[in-house]
Image (tube, rainbow, N blue to C red; front, side):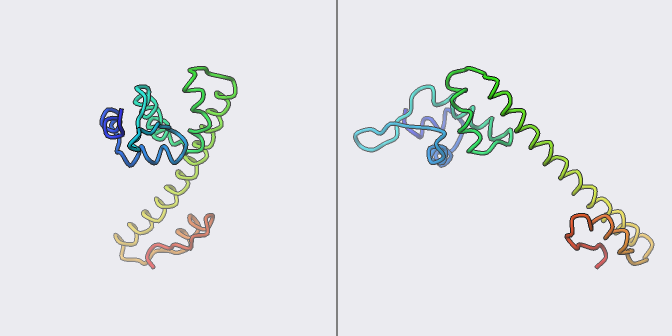
Amino acid sequence: MRIGELATRAGVSVRALRYYEEQGLLTSERSASGQRLYPEGAVFRVRTIQELYAAGLSSKSIRTMLPCVDTGQVTPELLAWFSAEREKLDRRIGELVGTRDRLDAIIAASAESWQTGVPCRSEGVRGADSAQGSGVRAGV
């Protein structure tokens, strides 16, 4: 099938398919006129790539595990790799929670300042923020 048909059937853009090829995630043959031609199984592969991207995996990570998708074989190495990816995600979630908590402190200090008319106490806001060193202060 040609690139436009694959894009339609897989629910992605032609540009996305070209990107997947650039990243080594998808391959095509070329017709005599130079058009990309894909096998029937490319629809499943593209949908799988989309799911893996949606799970937060990088192109490099997806490229690493696609041979297992192709064979359908789950290995202990693949399971370990998925677990490591999940641990990375847990760390990122923890960092985001910390960022949200610092923002909550800034919002609370700002709301109190707005309600009372008293300028924000920079110590409380800076204390919540200083661990990250961003230097952001509410009420400034």
